[in-house]
Image (cartoon, rainbow, N blue to C red; front, top):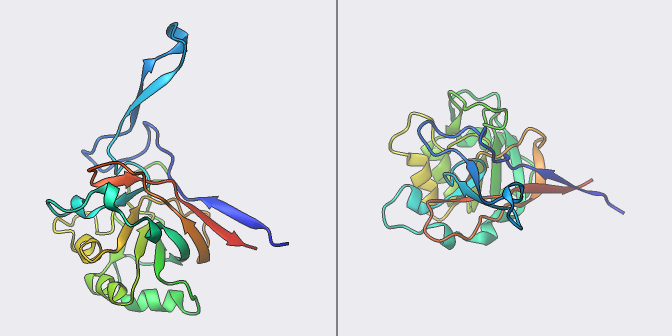
Length: 213
């Protein structure tokens, strides 16, 4: 019998979770507290939906577009390839994706392991990102989801968010702030359902990879 292993690729949310400079960090308060005489503990949280592992929505980059309740959940479940791009310093071209996914069948979902994520407890100064041409090629090939361990699909200094637009405007789902440190390059099954919350520009996600070994 095959042994099935699951890897949690979510970044844990806590007050120490790094967020984009200026964004709202995670915090937890208590509405009722048993230590203060209440019959139950009930917490209340404040957080940007971009804190920790999350899925961006078209609303994130375009006024009036669909929010988190409209995300196509089928894209967040199914075969996926983890692609190691830790040796790339700048833009990731389509030739790099092709070279590193050669021989894999499940290339409609891609997770990019850049090694510049927040999982180590610090917000990175920079990270590699897809070139716009690469994103356009992936869309044309029928890719339904692109994820990465870094804080954004675009580079840190981008103000136009061209990669976000190239993907989100054409129906490709985007996962950010994954923890791919234990995920070796290769094929897995992804389960990363976004929370169903109305009107948000991003949705928190609990993401796992499963493979048969």
